[in-house]
Image 1 (tube, helix red, strand yellow):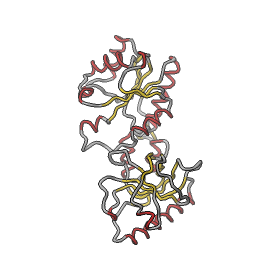
Image 2 (cartoon, rainbow, N blue to C red):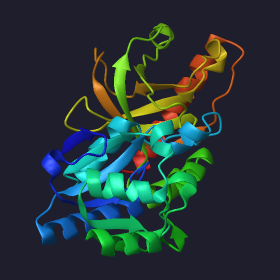
Image 3 (cartoon, one colour):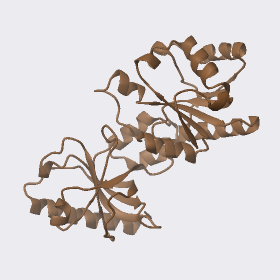
Image 4 (tube, rainbow, N blue to C red):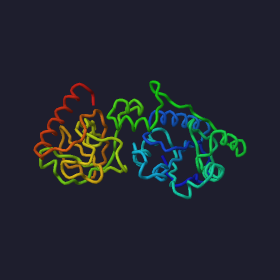
Length: 310
C-alpha cells in the first residue's frame, strides 16, 4: 500500500475512493473496503482511501473526544490488509474543516483525488457543518463525471457495526461483544520500552508497551495473547491503567506479564490481543498484596487458557 500526505493523487491518476475515519476497522468497514476493492478491480483503478489525522472529534472537542480504537499506524496496517492500494492521510485542521461541501467536492474529490467512483457509507456527511450528503454528491457526480454508490449499514446479530458500539463494549469489559463487531479479538500494537523494573523486583517481569492513543478504550486486567516474539502467540496477563498501587501514573500504561516466556525484547513491536477480562484495576495496601494478586491473576489466566484456544 502506498501512503500519501494530503488529498492529491499521484500524477493525477484517477481512483475508486472511499472516505472515513475507519477507527477500529470493524466488520462494517471491512465490508465497505471489500466492495471498494471489487469496484476498483472492475475499473482497473487503485482502491483509495481518504482518512484524517487527528480524528475530527479530537480537533473540535479534544477534551470530550472518544478513545481511539486504533493508532494511525495500526489503522494503516489494517487498511493495507483489507485491499487498500492508496491511503491518503489528510491533516484535519482549521483550514480543512472550513471547506464547505461544494469546495470539498471541487478541491478534494475532483481536483485533488480525481475520483471516478465514490463509495460511501449510508450515513456519510461532509463539508463545513456536515452539510454535504449523498444527494449532493450524486448531483455533483453528474456534473463532474464520477459515480456515487452508498453501501447500507452492516448489522451483526441485529446490531449496527460501529466504532461507538465497540467502544461501549470494551468499556463494559465485554470482549466477546467487541470481537463479534470487529470480526477478531480487540488488540493494541506498540513498541516495548523500558519501565521502572518493579514487576521484575516482585517476581513478575512485565513488558511495557507504549500507548500511542490519547487514552485507551479499555482498562483493567486481562488474559491476553501476544504476537511478535515467536512464531506462535504467547500467553500472558495484561494490565491497562494508571497503576494506583505504585503512584498513579498520569497516563494509562499497558503492561504484560508473559506466562511461559522470558527474554530481552526492548524495542520489539508487539500486538496484544485481549481475550478475557479478569478484573478491574484497583489499589492494594502493599506491594506484597499486589504480588499475591498478580499470582492469582496468572493462575486465572492459565485456567482460562486450559478451556479456550488462545
